[in-house]
Structures are given as structure tokens and as C-alpha cells.
Amino acid sequence: MRQGDIIESIPDTEAEKISRTSRYLIITHCCDLAHLNEPVELLPCHPIEVLDGNYTRGKNSRVLHFEINGQCYEVRACEKAQITRKQLGESIVSHTANGEEQRILRYWLASRYARQALDDDTYLLIQKLPLKKLAKKIGKELEGIWAELGPCEDQEDGTVSKERVYGLYFVFTCDCRQYCGEIEERIALAMKKMFPSYGNVITHCVNIDQFYYREATTYTYVNFDYLSAE
Image 1 (cartoon, one colour):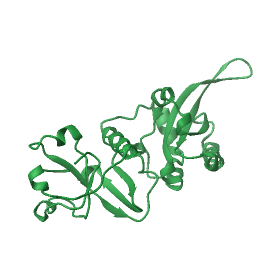
Image 2: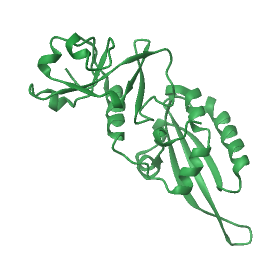
Image 3: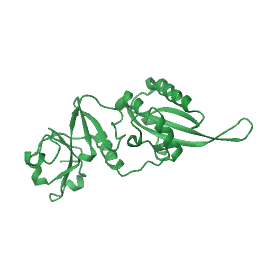
Image 4: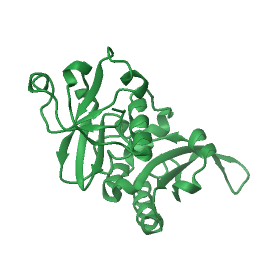
């Protein structure tokens, strides 16, 4: 048994203490699973009809959406429960996470302890942009969004404007060209309503293999848990 495994069921006596469902996601780290006396942490997997792009690939630290063999599931961090290995019994593992699934799960689990490192102006800006609506429409092909706060703009007369230049990087797991036009249009429309209160936003649509480690660690990942419902 490994972190990321999906088990079919747990004994009824234990299921009464947890949200009852037909599948459970093991989230205990593999090294802890090797110790029989250590408790096993798991999350109930709730079947859903479709994936919501706001919750795929670890974008929201409270809820995670994923798909296995054509069936979509939702797990909620607040439903984490513990049972002993003995109580787990002979539960059947129906799915073992591959490398990519394990990476996403570990990132999602770690994001619960991260904090959004955005200044107040940038935070207010992304709250007013239609990021959640775009993510919902794009779906799981959107790896995530990173924000960059640039310097103030230089004016034609040589002075420096108080307005900031913001960069938003939409990072995709697939060919992003089909989404670039709509993203730029939706962001420009939102900025037109706010300008000049919040400066300028430059959108970048890139494939994940073109978004390098330097950018990923220098820019700030937008945690969707911090965005408003709109």
C-alpha cells in the first residue's frame, strides 16, 4: 500500500466515523505506511459528474478533483480521517497512483501549509479578474496560474508612473494556443473596467515544458483557495 492508492472500502464499523463512500484515497506518506503501528490517513472519494478546473491539479488547497478510468472524484481536506492498519483489514487497492498523480497529490497536501505571498494591491487585483471562470472553462489542462509584480511603467516624459505592471502566467499541460485569445480578451475586458486603478496586466500563455524552474520559484503561484467565489 502506498500514498495515492485508492482502496475499495473499509469495514462498516469504521466507515460510520467517516463520510461513507465506496472509495477512499490513502494520503499517509509511504515511509509511515511501512510502520504497522502508525495510523493510516485517508480521504473519502466522492463521485462527481465532471471535473471543475478550479480544483484540478492542486489549484485549491481545500478541494481536489481528479479522474480515474473515466470516473471523476472529489476529495475534501476537511474530511481527513485516521484508522489503524488493523482496522483497515484486507481492503482492496483498486488504483495505484502513477508518478504524475503522486506529484499532484503531494503538492496539494503541502499547499495546505503554504500562504499566499502576494502584496495587498496584487491580491485585490486577482480578486477582480475572472480567473476562476477561466479555470472552470479550461479544465484540467490548466496546470496553474503564476503572478509576477513588475516595476512601475516609464512615461514618455521620462518620469515613472505609480502604476504597476502585472504579469499573469497561465501554464498548460497541453498546446495552449487554443486558449490564448479568450484569456487575453477576458483579462483585457476586466482591466478596462478597473483601469487605471490597478495598473496593467500582461497575460502569458505557456506550455508547462516552457515554464522553467526559475519562473516557477520566482513568481507567486495563485492559490485558488484565496480567490473570491466570482
